Length: 543
Image 1 (tube, rainbow, N blue to C red):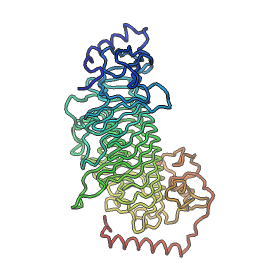
Image 2 (image 1 turned 135 degrees about the vertical axis):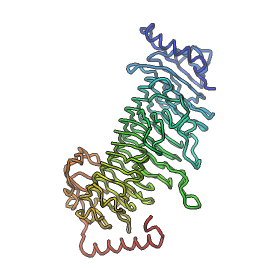
Image 3 (image 1 turned 180 degrees about the vertical axis):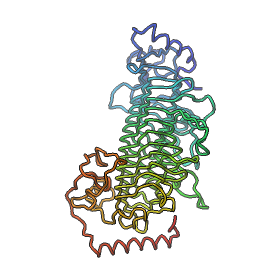
Image 4 (image 1 turned 30 degrees about the horizontal axis):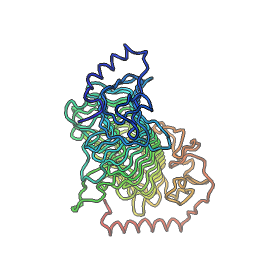
């Protein structure tokens, strides 16, 4: 049974609504809870008269109400709230006390959520830590109305069930079942559990460590786009922002933007996620699929200025993933390294995805599984430009029916190349002004170049190595066109001053140019065919 105010929730909801009008002039209450020195016989209205627990019935929630937990304490709780603040005066759940003390730990030992927010507006949760060894963190859902203006800020999520359960987690019935830090609504849950979207949600400066899943942001979908887009109804969450968050040591996924319009993930770091399913099954088949940060059935959304590294899931574990009819979405300024693969898109349900973009990204050592620009129903109006792909395996460009692939550096592992089929030769996708190092040009990209890029360094762990030195043949060798948006900044966050090939947009840094005479060309050709022979010996020449 959920605690806190759930027993008298229906009365609280009515009184809260009335008090907005009848008692607008009265100051909003602040409640103090101290698990070390508090006493449940106190009033709870001051630091010196703090309650010890949350088990009280005399709560009043009006705009501006604050519930504050003393730092250094641990609080066992399962909270169900249906309350609303305003944009100017949100309801706040936060901490107080000496900032040198640890954040208060809010936890449940049960298979449940610490917080369940139903039909809430303008509630802020900040400066606390949340753990649920057998459950989940926060579930935000709209059962009877749309939710607006929720803020989760400076919250540390840790130690939720984090093990390889040998299957995808269910996303339909809350954070506990999903083993998630935060989930909004759900995917294919029971009728009536959620019917309305969660809009203007902000998740900022949070950490997620040793949890199976991070932030599972779902709107409303009726029907399964994996089977057919006909009859699928979507109601999109709007204006979701995930900013400055850190994810580490997770058996599944950091962020899913599912059925969102205008969502943004920015300035985040995702390390060592998708650790489950790292090995194929004994018969060679794939057990299940996870990826760190991806789009599912979303539109007009972006993942940017983010580092993604250390994904291990054998089936997916890619950085770039447009999935389930995601359209006009973008990955940009992303640093991807040491993952199973850089990209593998998955259009479903019989129609291609449209208008997706990948630009100014750096991929280093994403080199176990193949990269695929499109699979399933394919991509149209697809844009892939000014990316730098280093030490990756072959790039599969099948099922890209229209768009542009330009100004990219492809420096594959020895023996790897661009894989294509007749559909590429007949497509309206324009491949131009790319650089292929140690790999042949595909036949639809004969005007691009094969040369050493002349990077500033050779430290594969330092992204600064992949600037171009002055005099590189790739400086000024890119193409400007109407279907390539002119970006103000490059991958390194600096003003673009030159139309280059790759993710660097400057005039070149100081450094030595590589000599690339006939001897060097012969060495690279030898390395390519040596790698090709090794792939043949290993039996993965076409895999």
